[in-house]
Length: 84
Image (cartoon, rainbow, N blue to C red; front, side, top):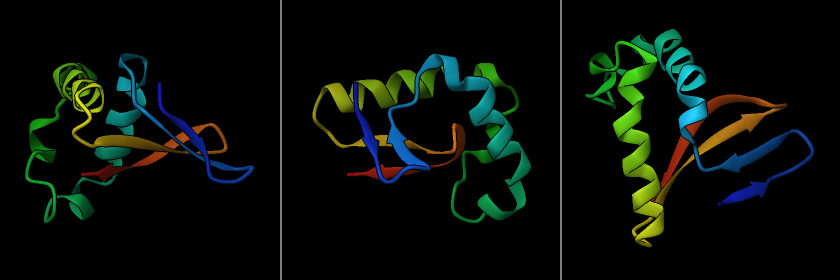
């Protein structure tokens, strides 16, 4: 599994199914800001909506086709970053 400590407070990690609730909360709190750049934001209406996308992200990484990483600040997911 991919994990990269940036510094003592910040790290990058592959999101897992266990992160669904936290990912949903971050997106839900920032919908207005994210909407112009991420057309899928309004389709994510519950943590369960992340099941398939997290599976896709893990497959992307396994297939060496880039990856999506959760940005973890002091133990909490604060965003995502994609590498293609």
